[in-house]
Length: 95
Image 1: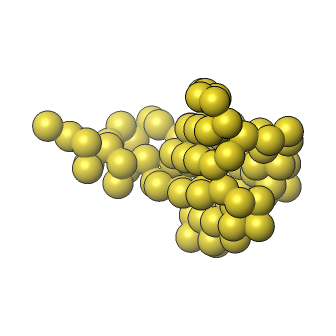
Image 2: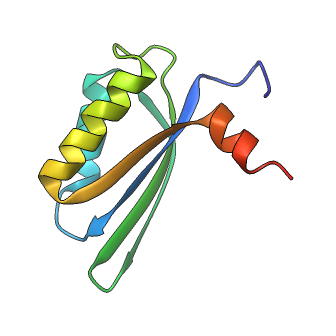
């Protein structure tokens, strides 16, 4: 892993499309002082998918607490939200 890279993680969101998904997830990240580095979302029919690259170096929550909060929020919104530390993601996808 590149030591110059911010403390980054990937957040995936999957569920039925509705108004406000990006706003709700972004608000929770902003409240935790997590910076969104990149975002991609797609809607296929009524299915919503999003992946976000985030920097949590200055977050008010550790990565586990952030993941727990996002997963709980996702359940309440009828979404699956998964947080994965970038180092683990990169190691899993290294050839």
